[in-house]
Length: 81
Image (cartoon, rainbow, N blue to C red; front, top):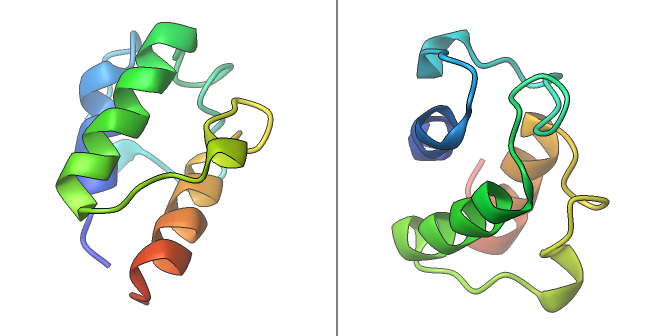
């Protein structure tokens, strides 16, 4: 799987962090300081970048808490490994 999702998260994070410094266990809210608006922007950017549509249930900060959660969801939706 490509790292486009890390570029997107890095761009939206309030914390200044390079995409190669983003680790799977990092939380989107606590570690990377995404708020509800940047979370929705992330979802929209991921949909465009990966040509997918997020299930309504997963447009939730409770379901996608960590970078790994985002990666796993994208792998599931795209069929990539």
